[in-house]
Length: 332
Image (cartoon, rainbow, N blue to C red; front, side, top):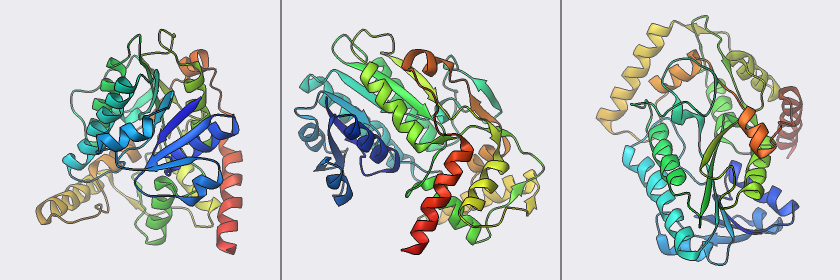
């Protein structure tokens, strides 16, 4: 197929683009800047912005399918910025697909679209969107996902994937943020809580996108559906964090702060950043405190059944790959 991957220069988008190339698809990428490494992998680049409908149409023209990975990700920032990229940008992708007769759209969503702030244990796709959201990212991704799924028709088949905490070698926000905060001494365990969470190794997340793309067609059983994607190995959150830190040569997190103090500090940081209109991200947010003190793991039986998805990289194997990659980066 001729496939456009939006955000092909990003962590997940890049992995999807490279995987599709290895499976014989013609791949192009829509990103705001050129990335020579994509060209080396045979990906055709279309510089452009999701907010520019003409740019999106130009990149989509001639494609048979779109994998929409581009998004604004983060724990903090103005709602308008998240809405522009995640909602308006997605709407532009939908308009381009509909106007150009593209028949397949795979949307990269997030499990946070169903997060309520309390424990999520073994949740499946029947879980509804919550009435309120604790982050602009979650709110706008839920809006975009609902828009994509409701646009499923006999002409345009759509499907949404919800990979959770994607990690692995490369310039990803999860590992980079962990390393930055660990080195600056900003990481603290919150109380004695160590709830289980799911993670997804990058290669498995990319494979889920390939499977969905190749099984999707108007009227197919997966059209109009959403699927949780994980590694299928829920583990205590601080075990996960400390294992990743160990893989990159950093000591485990041992300092502890009580939950009530963590929430108060998060509220204080958020207030300071809101009042002063500071750029960047607060050291701590209430949404992050929730993520570190609640369980969030998911039932992936639907993805196994409908997509033929099966995690292939265990958490232990992923750690070894991360360790090897990180050691190689230090030697450069």
